[in-house]
Length: 291
Image (tube, rainbow, N blue to C red):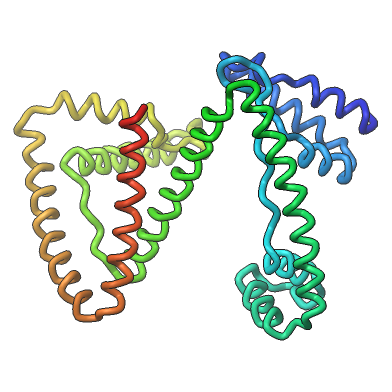
């Protein structure tokens, strides 16, 4: 199968035809990926980079997408260092450290070369962006696309802020908030199911070793149904344990906060992280309120 034949097939896979069928969509994606295996690396790279349109989830029409801004000067230098023999065997963090050190020692001619390449790509990017904006404006789609891009950008910023805060909490040893009574019941329910499967596996040779306890939505729904069927007396045990853990958490958090305030710098870092996350969450609520 040559490149031309495969490209014809990939171009013929119109995802808008499969919008209402998840199973068929999965099959179409599998077919496209299987066909892509026959493409030469150069042709596959071209197919991945030249596409600047997407399928509208409502109309099925192709909507032009804004091109990605070209990487800056240091990122270009970093990429050159990443593929250099000196970076062989190094992880990404080490490569970045090496590139940062070499960047300060790099001759001005190299920096000027990278800057000129960046400015050239930047000018081309601006022209392509202006062309896309003009097309979207003609089709009365510009405001909608910009609004969607703003939502996606906010969602990415929120994910990063939450990850940063979680990483900071772990580094500073912040006590983890305990689960409620229902969460304790589900956790115990899962353990019981696991023991049952293990017992069956040991007693019955027909139980496959691959049999395991599902922790997906169906299992959670089953546990929730059983929780609703418990009497108040049965739930009381889990509620008492949840209250005990809650009181323990409150004491540990108070002690941790007092210790953090004494450190000064760490408290300031935590405060800034919390403020950043709070601002992003407020911005998200504002966008939702406008909708």
